[in-house]
Every structure is written in C-alpha cells, then in structure tokens.
Image (cartoon, rainbow over all chains, first blue to last red; front, side, top):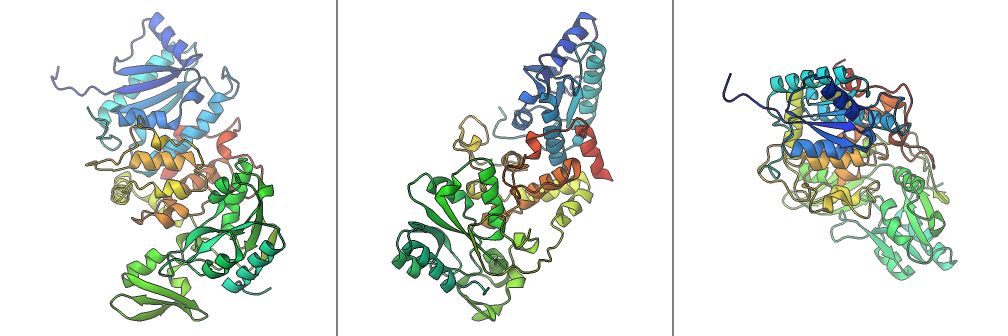
Length: 144
Length: 327
C-alpha cells in the first residue's frame, strides 16, 4: 500500500426520506462504501441551496454528490423537481467556468436501493480519486 | 413624434410637476465631466431644469432606485428606457414596490455610450459634448476628437432587446427598427473551448475583481434587504487574497441568485470598474434556461413565473445538462 495515497473528501447530501434511508439499508445489508464519503442529512434534496455545494468545495471538499428521491416520489410532492432544475443550471455554470464536471453529481436513490447507494458511492469516489485534489474551486480564505 | 432631447424631457417633467401629477422626479443629474451622469432625485422645477441631463451617457437604469423612493409619500416621476422597463416589470412581478406611487414616462432610446470603451480607445478624457454630428470628446493629451455613437455602444445596446417599453404611463419619442446582434455569440464561443481554456479565460477575468460589490449594488434583480455577501460568516464577505481564481465563489453565487430573474440589462458590466464581462455569466444562465426549459424573457410580462420556481415532470437531468455542451 502506498503511504501517501490520496484520500478524497467527499460530501454527500442525502434527503431524509429516500437516500438517507437508502444509505441505512446499505449498512444493514453489509454493503461497503468508502469512508471518504461524509453524509449530510437534509430534509429534502430541495433544501440544498447551490451555495451549500460551493461552500463544501470552498471548505476543501473534492467532490459533492446530491442524492434525493426519484423524481415523482418526493415526500413533499415536488421538491426534487426544483432541485433538478437548479442543479442542471449550477453544474452547467461550473462547467462553463472550466471546473471538472465529474466533481459534482446528482443521483436519485430510493429507500429500497441500498445496493445502488453503495455502487454509486464506490463509483463516485473512484472518479474523484482519478481526478485528484480539488484545485480549481478551492478557497484559500477557508484553508486552515 | 420627435427625437428626445434634454429640453423635451425637462418640459415634460416641469409640466407634470406643475399640474401636481408628481411631486418629485428621478432623473439623470449632471456630472462634472459630462460623462459621469448620476441618478438624482429633483424636488423642484428650478433644480430640475438646471441640473437634469440627457445624453448618450445616461445608461443608468432607475428601476432599483424605486424600491426606496416608493416607500416615501407622494408620487415620483421616473424616466424609463425600453430595456429598463423590463427590470421595472420584473420588480413589479416580485411585488417589490407599489406601482401607484410611480408615474412612468417611457422614452425611446437609440443606444447609450460606454465611457469605458472611449477611455480604452482614447485614454483619459476631460469632458464630452454631444450634438447631431456625434460625440465630441476632449482628451487630456490628444486634443478634441469626434466619434460616432455606434463605435462606443454599451454591450447591452448592441444586442438590444427591443425599442418598445413594456411598461409606461406615457411614452414619448419614436420606436425605431431594431437589428440586434446575437447576444449568445460570445457564450457559445466560450462553450466550444476546452475546459482548460475556459478556466484560463475566467481566471484571467475574475482575478481582476476588486470586490467593490458595485455589480451587486446596481443590479435591479439583487433586491434583498439582507445580502449573503454581508454575512461575516459566509466566507465570501471579504476580498480573496492570493487566490489563483479569485472571487469565483462571489461571482457564481451572484449570478445564480439572479438566474431566471435577470433581464439581461447589463448594468453589472457597465458599472464594473475593472471591465469584467459579468454579463457573460448571466447570459450563460439565460441561454441554458432558454435551451432547457423554453424561451423565457424575465420582465416581459407582469406576473410570469420564473423558470427556477417552476418545473415540468420531464425536465432534463443535471448530468445531461452538462453533456449537451459537448455537442
């Protein structure tokens, strides 16, 4: 094993009703996902303000993934539809500024999809490991 | 209908003051050099006739000033150019002020000059004068020069949205044919570049930002009483120092906050002391919104629903939004 292996910091915003329960199910089923993923529970994927995502990068995250209920299954009826529009615009803007498009992702994970949660996270961590450290969106003001 | 002049606007303003329709006027006030025109509230006809100015340097959009002005008593007269009327409508849509407290005189416009473009071309200028032949500038070292308005148009006037006001109580002037250029030309060119080139472009542009917040202060869509950029805990309240991609957070957040509500009035680029093409960020959002969710012009109709507070069941997935760009 390499001593200086890159350990990415990954923030996953998970909605309380589907994706967080999906992560729980993954745990119950003994499905592995990397410890680099730090889950932040939010009431709904719609709670995630685009500024939260930028803030995560600012504070040193290397990748941010947002998980919510499948469109149409939102606990609050329509929250994730708004999320979808917001994130489409935000990701497109980040891409426009030349930031690697693989660093951000939206994935719909239901409470029954523990397996999907674990494969998604494994995949995402792998992608970020290949990309390396987040340099383009870091903020030196927040570096401790 | 005649061409609008300073005198015709003064006549209109004095008339409305005298017959009691309004008790004060929000208009362009004279500056020291002719090009530094400042939005001013005039309370009497003497100061109005003396200090009011109308020339090709009256780019300032008054819509945002109405937020504070309509909280006072009485009625205010405001001069609105066609592109300002979109911002006016957008603020009405957001219920930001009472339209009964404003008397809107819509005026036709043939484009406004960008003083920064003149300065770039001819160096510092001492004063400007305007007549039928064009704009005469006195440069500091090169003597007088006459230039045509078309050479130094503001960015937003090259891609003019239309010569008709979308809201007014009274309209003066004449509506002319409009041949705007494609406003997304530069955005499309940037999209075609590689990610590294785009990053280099924005690094170059945004590293000039001095965080004066002028773009936020002037923006007619930025009307929050409490702004995220004033929050000392936000991490973006100060100027970033020694950062390779300075102030990207500020600019992404600023552009996102007005996404879907931005009328593309171009005030942000006009006031930027560093000449950063901020409208390219806003236009990117407008282009995406038009492409993903159908054509939408903020402020065109009162009460229209902005794309970010609306949805369709078969909207595009965020991953596809990014992929589309490669094509």
